[in-house]
Each structure stands twice: as structure tokens, then as C-alpha cells.
Image (cartoon, protein in one colour):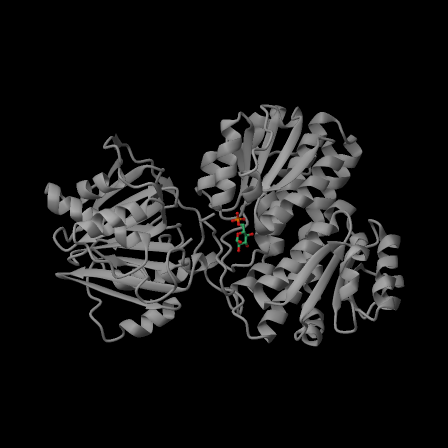
Length: 612
Ligand code: G6P
């Protein structure tokens, strides 16, 4: 978590840094800060969001063409002014920003205290910058070398940027476990946790590898090396991201924009891959591993949060279409329970950010045990795709709202394509069924456009339930994960307690909660256990619960029972999650807005969870 930005060159650093912090605020937003060199080392930091920092620095000296900035999600120490980054060294000649955790900071701190160091914060980061200065003073090394020696004493994850009053054209950066991108300008360097703060200045970037550091000096070429002091040749890549994707484009919130983008994002996921004319799915990134996947004894889907819900839909899809057994695992549980993994297992890691610490650690473990690891990620160049054997990007475009929407439907789309590709190769479905499903998948973006037309109606329903204390989401089969995802969306952004349940399980507990105050959202399309769901709706109504049902267009039976019905087009049962999810996203969105919640940056959450 935490977002870092840094700049060195001939432009004014502050506007670049502050804009970059806004772009990275999704990574954490409990405090932020900036340090700029201009003869003096001016450092300003504040508890709260980036705009609070902006207010704070008004009328302060922010001149300078080299600087570092940080937006924080607290790990060590409360979110307050002292613990905010950047941090000064003991004599305030050096400043650092850091994303990650220094695990051995306690012993390092004790050692430094015994040598007279005094600390102003409770953070692990401040210990690191004191250590760097201590090495610099004692061993008479330059800044880069002091950073390098210090990093060799550090255990943990980091992406850091360091500046020094004495070497005022130099930015030293290093990465291990936390992401770091370097943008190469004409006469300058841009550094950030992801490419979004960089893309408007340059498209030429380097994604740093673990254990690497770089010396970025104005007017000079980059020096890239390992922390063990071996020079590396930089591998430059070209950014393809569009700038528009990073703006709200007239919507009030990123989340609403991203909900409405889904017809486009799903088309992007399918573009060039779903080839109707040829009757095939071509996922270039995993071609080499097609046989491995076809012959897998078992597929393990590993993910966290919303991506885990996509994995659950994937389980239903893969088992139905390919007949390969699937297990879906929370990465955090999987990695700590000594699971049985064999060389015949294929692991599919699903992650929007490609940075989730638990997912990353889980796949490293499975890889060590010989499994084949495939990735389904959205952020190009992120850590998970670089750790996998192969994979496919979802290409949903940058997702800025902390609550995931378009990334989820793109993950489900990609899983559907993967399952269809394998099923077709294996012959576990007939050619005609395969073609029928390809056609049906291809039609989904247009059908989502239809669903989005329920927007105003969903908003009216949301108004009736905005003050609810609890909500229950029910679904069966493919729509059980949709129920979980619907509940998670409501919980994360509106702070209403919500639970998703397999509809039949309601009788084993949640039914006790139902009264006239309780909205029960039931996903009840015509295809897939419809009669059973009708019975479940009757059970809720018999207890005076309020039913909001997602039904197939033209449905009359549920309409007669439910308090509200939201219609979705008739689609194949296995594709219902892609359309049924949309009204649930809108419902949560409007409830959160009506409750005056910060939709794009819900309290305590972060989009990219890089700590376990
Ligand atoms: C956080 C985000 C969720 C996301 C989850 C997994 O909790 O707030 O929206 O689903 O992390 O993230 P990933 O990037 O691995 O999909």
C-alpha cells in the first residue's frame, strides 16, 4: 500500500508530485507529504488526504526541481503528522519515502538509539533513513553507496526514494517487493508506484525488479544496479495507457464511470481474442501452457477480495465446461496452511492490481512446489504477472475507484474465455455448444448497455433502503458469487452490514435476521434454479422481509411476489454473473452517495493491498 512519487529534472517538482499523489491516492489516503530540495530541504506533511496537504503548503516554499512525495496507508504507527512520510534523517540532510515494511526495524532502531539517534515517529521508514545517514557519516560514502549498504542490512519489502541536501541533483531509488516504475524524460526522471503519475510526461518506462536500485541524476543516463552492486542493463518499455482513462470524464465519481465503462472494458478484454469467424478463443499469453491446463489434475484459483469472487465464478465455469476439478482459495489462507500442491496442478492467480501481497506470496510458494502458475491481472507490468509462468491481462483499463467493478467483470470474461478455449481443445463441450457460447459472450457488452438503462430505477430503489442497517444477498449456482460480490460492494462503500449467502443456506441462519426492516436482494434469473429461488423469495416474504429481485426481462412470477424487480436480459446461465452484477454495483453506489460516504476512497480501505 502507500503511493510514492519522485521527480528530478529541470521542471518544478511540486506540481508533478502533487498531481502524482492524487493519481496514487487509491493506494492509501490517511496522510501525505512532500520534500523538495532547493538549497534547503523543505519537508511538509499532514494527516488526511492529499488536498489537505495542498492547503497546508499554500504560501510555503515549494520551489525546486527535485523532490519526493508520499500518500500513506498506515502500517507502523497511527495516521498522524509525525508518522506521515517523507521522513528526515537525524541531522535533516536526507529525506526518504517508503512503501512496504522493514521487518527488522526494531533491532536496527535499538542499535541506532544506542549510538545517539533520536526518532520523531513510530515508523520503520524513519529507522531506514537514520541508518543510511549513519552509514554515510561513519563510512564516508556517497548517497547511493550508503543506500546500497543500508539495504543490505534490511529485511523486508520496500520501494524507496531518497534525496540529500549534499547531492542535490540526485535521486536514489530502490525496490524489493513493492512496485516501482521509472519514467525516462528528455532531461528528467519520474518515479512512481505505478505508471499513472508518469504517463502524461513520458511513455518510456522501466519497471524495476526486486533487489534493484537506480541512481537518477539530472542530465545523466540512469544507472541501474542490484543492491549487491552488479550493473544491470535497463529494459525500456512503452506505456500504452490513455490519459483519459485517469480522469473522471464528467462522472461524479470514478466508481460510477467505471460501472458505465463495462461494455467497453469487457469488449477490450475480448478484443482480438474472441474470434467468432474462426470459432475460437485465442489467448496468446497462455498458448504455451494450453496443454498443461488441459491436462491439469486440478486447477487452483488464488485471489483476495473481489478477485476471489471472480475465482468462484471461474470454478463453476471451469468445472462445467472443462470437467477439470477446481478449488478456489483465499491467498492468505492458502499460503499459511501447508497445502498439497503437485506438479500437475495449475494455479490461476487473479488480481486487478497484480500487487496483492498475499496473492503474490501464495503463487511464489506454489511455484516453488512445482505448480504451473498463470495470471489474470489488470495492471500491466505489475508484480504478479512477472512472477507467473504465463498469463493474460484483462485490459479493463485503469480502475481508480477502490471498490472494484469493471475489473471484476473483465476477470469473469477472461475466465469464461479461458474455460471455453480449454473445453474446445479438450472436446469436453460440442462444437455447436462452443460456438453458441462464443456468440453469447460476444453479445454481453450490448446486453450490459441494456442493464445500465436501469440506472434511474435502481437509484429510486436505493433511496428507499439507504438507511438500512443490514442487507442480505441471495443467489444460487453461478449467482452465489454474485451475491457475495453484491454484499461486499455495499459493505465496503456504504458501511452497511451485508452478507451474501447461497439462497438455500438462508434457512440455516440468516433467516433469523429477517424482519420488515431487512432488504433481501435475490438474484433470480429464469435460467438456473428458478423454482427454488421462487420458494426462497416466498420464505423471505412470509417473514415480512423486503425483496429486491434481479429477474429476467418479462418475468411475472417473481414480480408478483417481490417488492421491487430489476430486469436483466435473458442470457446463458453461465453468463448471468456478467449482467446481474451491474445493478448490484449501481445499488451500492447510490446508497453510498445518499449516505454521504466517500465512494471512491472508502474509510480504512486501499485498492492495492501490499501488506499481508
Ligand atoms: C483490496 C481492494 C479490492 C480488491 C482486493 C484484491 O481489498 O479494495 O477491491 O478486490 O484488494 O485486490 P487485487 O488487486 O488482487 O484484485
